[in-house]
Length: 236
Image (cartoon, rainbow, N blue to C red; front, side):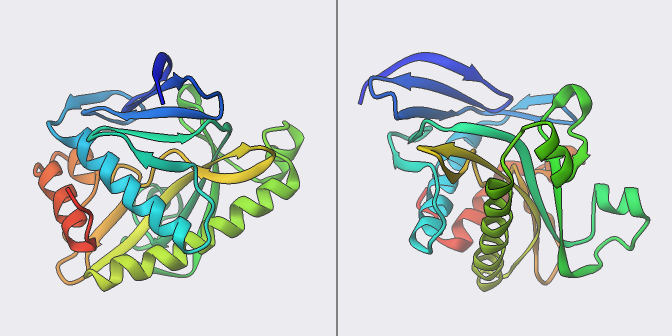
């Protein structure tokens, strides 16, 4: 499959066309950003780690009944994925209260959430990704009601699968975001799943093993990503 012109460049990934309209190349860069792009740095090896981490998770989910856009790894920093029409809504699940949930609601940081909290956010950096609900999504035509229902079902299925995967490796899946798209009219999980888009804590020490290390200036970002990958068996 031939890689062709760049179609889109985001904060940490780029998308390239191929000679097959059904597929694109997803390229993971070393760029790292936080606070809607206000804090940006280059972290060596991050693109490679996230590419391989994402491939591992996407394949694991696909093997367990979650339709994903992932097709194959090309090299250390690039993968082939389905060329989807992305839905501009993020699905967020919170298993433990922290971050913005604590700031918004004044609940205890570290409180276990049972059942988990599910939230929708509109993907719009200029508006700082505001929270929305099913009525906004349907009224403004961001997705059809049936597709929204499918997104929710898949998000909770992912939660069941990944909570156990990380728990078996001595970690707590605190929260995460997922993005979905349409391919041939069907809903598939898209974008990426990596420590960039979730919170992971060591189950015993509560040490942060995710992008919060970058947000909060804790250091050791890449080392933490590598530790998570090693624990769950990602071949780096």
